[in-house]
Length: 318
Image 1 (tube, rainbow, N blue to C red):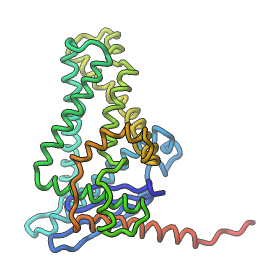
Image 2 (image 1 turned 90 degrees about the vertical axis):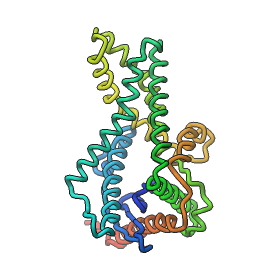
Image 3 (image 1 turned 90 degrees about the horizontal axis):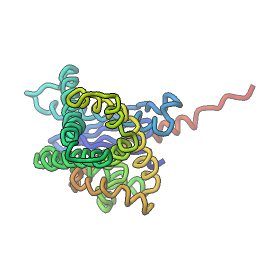
Image 4 (image 1 turned 30 degrees about the vertical axis):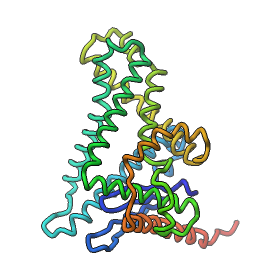
């Protein structure tokens, strides 16, 4: 299925992922494209429970995080290998970088909005309005973050590769020969983009936190105002994150990804699609070629595996 394919921008490259394979391609300073293709097994393919609705969304998020970090580390090491004075990242450096990155993400996009909304509760009456305010703060912090990092030259190039990734996937989904000219005619936005997923997570969080008024429940236990209550609110938010991620996945990936032309899909995903104007930029031909090379590598490997499976003799009935 076409919607089984997705990808991610890397440092001077693109990672494309299919049903059982992912390919990473990066362009070197001398113009050559280096690549690596590897097979993987999704969590949802390992156990039927992990493939259940809502559960598969959480598993998909874990798969994407793990494979995405591996691909970024690969592209970083490819870039460092070009410089004789630089050394590739060690496992310890990779682990420290990952911990710091996740920690900063949790601090900025999770803890900060919760803390701000918590201390402004006296000014914002009602559970719904408090959750709405927290969601607005979260989106605002995310927007400010994107605007600031876009000023960095290296990030702008990553966002160009992000646009190239989307255009290559569009080209494949429309059944056209995968060339830069064919891919360039398509928009740099895509309904299954991780940016759209993140915005959906923020919107669904407002609804889930309102349906499950954890602030009121916590207050009912007689927890004194101040830090202890804030800690419990944060814990409660963490407990509901898998639910939020699962619902968001079903909407953005399973439903919207299969019905991109549905008018309701366009309305629901409009905020996330608009946000992609910040996280994607128009790619040049070299970047398009890199994204297409990654897509073709995935398709070639998976076509070969399917042909091998089809040629395998069927055991005779006993």
